Image (cartoon, rainbow, N blue to C red; front, side):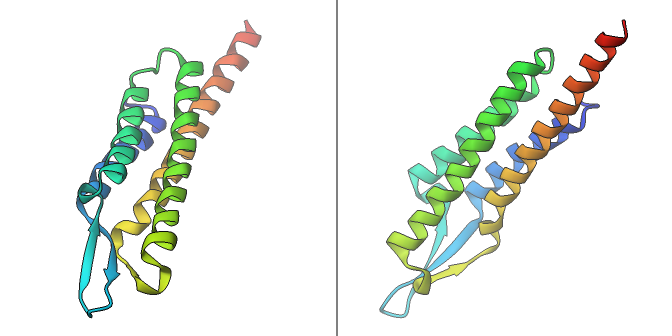
Length: 138
């Protein structure tokens, strides 16, 4: 289980989601010259989205005996992480405004979450192709 590279990618997705909850992803500049630090744990929808992606990624690690189901779960998780990035971008553009927003280090984590999900899917797909090719040889 742990020897497979996709397990590492899925663990990285889980870790990145948990880290995203606790580090600032932005800075909202207010008209009275104050700034509010945006952290996902302060916003229920952001925190729930990140936790859902983390739980799905962690649960899919243990589906290694059923690669087809694992591929479907990781593909669903990839789509959820893409929707999560779109949700965050929508929130920034509509509610904060790009001119009143300052990016922090946490803003890059959703991109890494999506990339690690895609890499995990590719690893599972290559394992499935390898098993199919070995079945043809028998």
